[in-house]
Length: 292
Image (cartoon, rainbow, N blue to C red; front, side, top):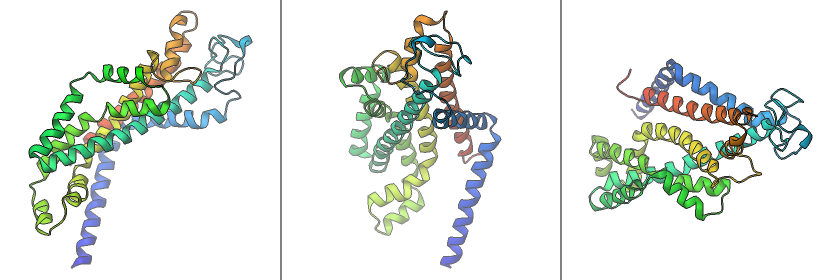
C-alpha cells in the first residue's frame, strides 16, 4: 500500500512539473525573456575571456572610439576604457546584486508571511503592522536614505535593496497561508501532533511555492533596476568600479557626441529587466492551477 501511494505521488508530481513546463514554453514572451537572459549571461561571463581589454585599462589615445573600431566592440569611454569590458563587468555586478537581493528578501518575506499567516491573531497582527510600516515609506526614498549613510559597495547595496524589497512578498505569502491553514491535510498534521514549525515549512510552504517563485523572479528585475537607479544618482556602486547605473551617469554629457555610451548600458538594463519580467509572467501563468 505504501509503495503504491509513493509511486502515485511521484507520478502526480512528474505530471504537474511537465504541465508547468509545457505551459511555460507555450508563452512566447516567456521564451523570449529566457533567450534574452541567456544572451546576457553568456555575454557577462564568457565575453570577458574573448576581448583583449579589462574594465580598468585606460588608453587616452583611444578616447571616444566609436563601436567596431580599433578592436573595441562597443567603442570606448572618455578615458579610452573599453566599453564592452566595462559592460560585461557591470553586468556581473548587476546580476550578483539581483540574485543575492532576491534570495535575502525572499527568505525574509517568506518567513514573516508564513509565520503571520499560520499563527494569525496577535502574532500575525504585529508582523503585518511591521510590514505595513515598511510599506508606508516609498521604497525608493527609503533605499536612497539608507544608501546615503552607508559606504557603498556591491554587498552593502545588495543588503539595502533586500531590506527594502521583502514586504510585498510577505503580504502575498501571508494571504496564501491563511487560505491553506484550515485545509484537511493541515488538520490531519495537527492531529498527528506535528510541531508548528514542521507544519509551516514542510506542509504549508511547499503548497504556496507558486507565488514565491513568481515574486522571486520579479524581485531580481526590481533589484537590478534599483541598483542602476541609485548608482545613476551617485549613491550606489562608485567609479572606477563599473555599474550599469554609473555608466549611464557618466554618459549624460556625451549624449550627442558619443551616444553609444548611454545606448549600450541602456540596452543591457532593458534586456535584463524585461527578460526577468517576461519569465515572471510566464511562470505566473504556468503555475496557475486553474489552467490546464
